[in-house]
Length: 141
Image 1 (spheres, rainbow, N blue to C red):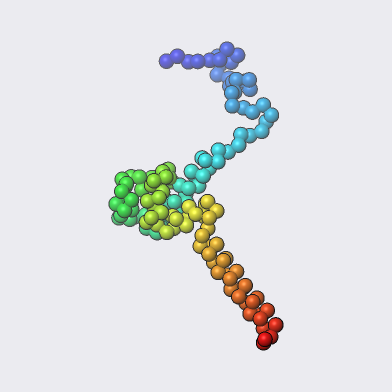
Image 2: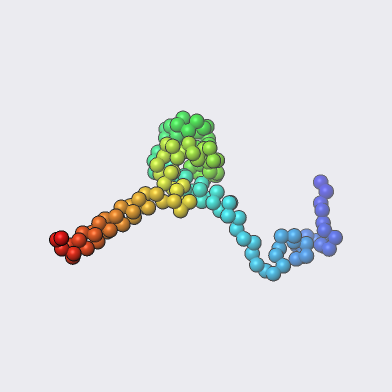
């Protein structure tokens, strides 16, 4: 086996100098977090939690989820362990069979439809109440 030692490094095992570190920023700032990698990690966690809420995580439930979604049980185990998350098509299939996964994905996308619908219904009630008060204030014709 050939050991590579940079020219400016001593052979006694000392670490590389700062000049040799290709990824070190020159101004001392840290590199920004990759937003896609962050979303993938969060998605894996959210999907695993949602699947546990809807189906559980026992061996029979894993087999049932695998049959419903047309995937290998090992794939479902990986989702539940958050080793990885589903791909796009797999996510769509999951959303068809799990309301919790659908709600989690919409919540991650800031599209909380249930919350928006409840807020809209509350706004309508408030508007009706204000209109009744206004009509009562105006009195009969």
